[in-house]
Image 1 (cartoon, rainbow, N blue to C red):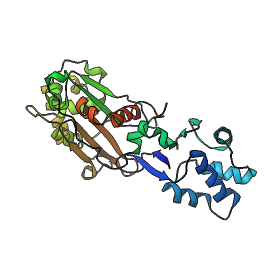
Image 2: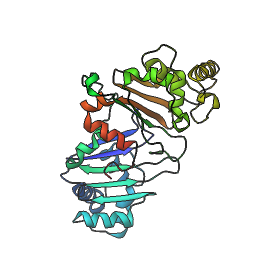
Image 3: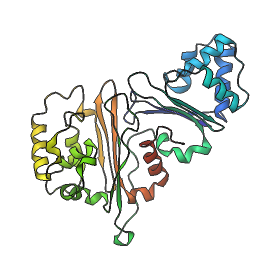
Image 4: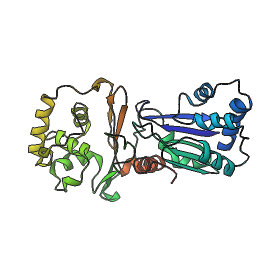
Length: 315
């Protein structure tokens, strides 16, 4: 068995499509495609790819179209597959091929669209890629004061232009766990200028006395625009909260967003939100988790942090 993952902003709350394929190797899948649509040209390339991968994958059809056009023989090794893809596959970014995977970064002039074929030897590195339904598991290990001060990670899979993948690396709060993060956001003296905009809004929308992030995330869902900064968000928490609540009260149009379609779940050690941004671009994802959750889901946490850092999860 091999896996296919398409990181696409056009699909689903987690902005990706995941498929299991019956082939023993990635090379075998491409060879099967050759047999299906190159050797036997009665089959339409687009129809075969849709049946295999669930829908269109931007540019992938070109390898089979050009194999038909030029009478190209099916590859016999992963090295031959690499050479054929380098010469005949249409992509806008990067191509990486080895014995266990094909990784492609491309874009459609709107957003970046990485996709990956890989075999089971890489599955442990791909835990987040292979998780294709909402929500992430939320159980965690028990922690105590003896386990140290803790650590919170924030992964914001957000974008506001065509630079839509990994433009904002994960953020960390050392010395705190998620149950204490709301209070920490109200009282921190960190340099707010280095914070992502979404975190500034979250801080501002945590109300005085609130112990959990759930209500603040629900307010974030109604924030009118994350593209527009505001100097008021850098003030004291009291000043930022007053400004932010006033902004919510006069939010106006949400520019195509449907707040009813947003998904929010806040548990003791993991808070997660798939925020609906538009019918066209779908959702963006926020994950806030601490070391107690990481200890229970080590592969998933590591994979998620890579996913927020680098387009190629196997780099």
